[in-house]
Image (cartoon, rainbow, N blue to C red; front, side, top):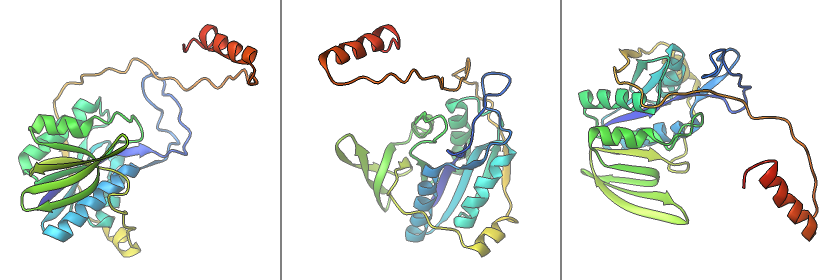
Length: 248
């Protein structure tokens, strides 16, 4: 089984974000970047499928040259091949999905695995976009997975329960937290990963479908009004939400 795992590099949740001078992107200076946490489950899923069914695991990311660091993490965990689609802008989700679909169309993997979403833009769009571009079935937020021959059986998390589905390979899935516990790379594997080759590709020629008009940090000013639970306080709260906060 040939498995393609797609990962992304994201800012660490503890890092301090600043808006760049262009007003439409973050300033990378001083920002610590990490492997998207949900993608750890995707890598582990690919490795487990390889252990069960044989084959190889290719890990791919779309991003700048610095994204090689997350590919080396995947290599240290056990991925066989690492591929960087060099695109510093990553214009929008459609451009990223097009680059992934283009690579998949050339290499014909049996299974494409994503993390359920990235923690930077949280768009939750790319797995479904890739599946649509390839005209493959797509199963999102997978929390249980078995593959028998060309039949994939999975449980997907939905509001208030689980959805059991079957699909035919090739297929796209996105891994939910808890599908498998990610392994920790051993020090010798981390050292070996530093010298392993990373294949680089040019970005796709797809045009962005979404334009970022501007970015802004949340307003940190707070009035700190404290109200009680009397009828008059409740009425005052409703008035403030309506007239001042303008959220209702």
